Amino acid sequence: MRTNTVKARLRAGESAIGCFITVPAPMLVELCGLAGFDYVLIDAEHGISELETVENMIRAADATDIVPITRIAVNQQQVILRYMDAGALGAQLPQINTAAEVQQVVDAVKYRPLGKRGLAGVRATKYSMGLPFPRYIEQANQETMVIVHIETPEAVANLEEMVRVPGVDVFFIGPTDLSYSLGYPGEPGRPEVQEIIGRIVKVVRGAGKAVGIMATDVAGAKRYLDMGIQYVATGDRALIAGAAQNYLKGVRS
Ligand code: 3PY
Ligand code: MG
Image (tube, rainbow, N blue to C red):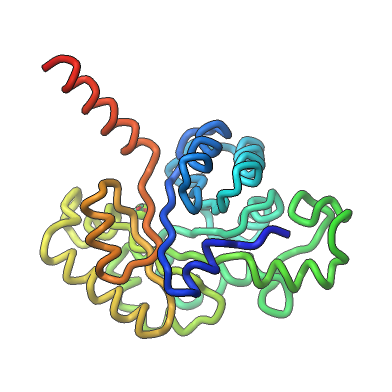
């Protein structure tokens, strides 16, 4: 199976820059791969892609050497399984608030003995024409990633326990939901929110895990990278909207 270069970069203390893809379009994944992003976050939470298209988007990622991670709306083993079976190299789960919920994600992503993921002759296992299952299981458990969102006050309160669950690679700050759930919708830059982001970074890094965040613009991404956040993602809608507005401003001025 593919080596997960994002996981390797994070382990080596390096950063990985990705892009959420909310549109059901393998072409956009290819475009991100060819542009040089480290990973795509195929978004099945706020995005509108259905599983069949997600599988083709993962194919496009494999063809352009970019790591495919899927954001999955529901923290349920049988739901997560289908995205992993399609060949995703990681599962990113939103709105995770307790250590028990973290454990559920790990159980769904990892095969036994690390988790309880089901095994079958699917795309991820090369339809049983790849490595023998014992060898595949070992590799999949090494290469797949677990990413959980921290985006509520409950998660912040439980963070010390959550970071102790083995098997998580990245604790991902969702600035939109975090600021909203703290009572400041649309204001992730507020000092109250930034103070909590700083606290999350300290706890997660203190536990030897990587921190992730969404930063749509360059200045924000650089600021978060400087804070030691290693897994930074922009998004297709923000990139397209920003470029479109800039273009029109330039042409019409
Ligand atoms: C959020 O900001 O809430 C997200 O989930 C994505 O960054
Ligand atoms: Mg969110």
